[in-house]
Amino acid sequence: MSGQNPFEAMMKMSREWATSMNVDMDAIAPKGFENLWPTMSAEAMEMFFGKGSNPEGLDAKTRLMLTLAGLTVLGAQAESQIRLTVRHLVEAGASKQEIAEVIAQMGMFAGVPAMSKAMELATEVLDKDESA
Image 1 (cartoon, one colour):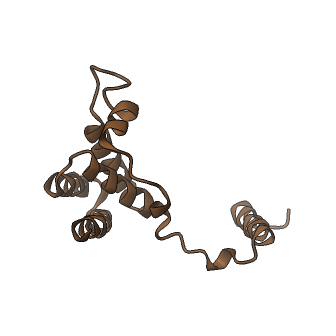
Image 2 (tube, rainbow, N blue to C red):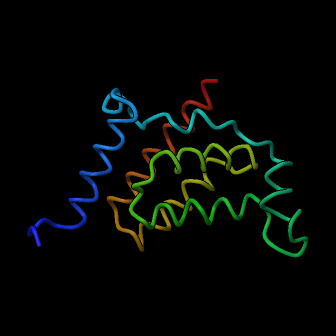
C-alpha cells in the first residue's frame, strides 16, 4: 500500500484524465450550466412528471416543490439544480411565496445555512425572471 487515500488517488486520476481531454478544463466555471437547459413548458412538465404519467398522482408543480425541498435538505450544494428547479417551478405556476415557503420549511430540517443558500439561489432566479 502506498498509504495514499483511495479517494484522493481517484480524484487525482480523474483530474489528470479531464485535463488530458481538454487542457482548458480549469477555465470552465460550473455556474450558469443550467442556462444550457431550456425551460420546459408547463404542459410538457405535467405530461412527463405530473398527472400525464399518473392521473391520480401528484401534479408537476408539487413534484418540483418536493425536488426543491430535497435539494435544500441536502445542504443546497447542487446550485445549478436548485436554480433549474426554481425556474421550472415558476413555469409550472408556483408563486414566489410558495417557493420561499418550501425552502423556509426545510430550514427546520437542513439548518439555517442550507436554507439561506437555497433562498439566495432561488432569489437569483426569481429576480432574473422578474427583469426579463
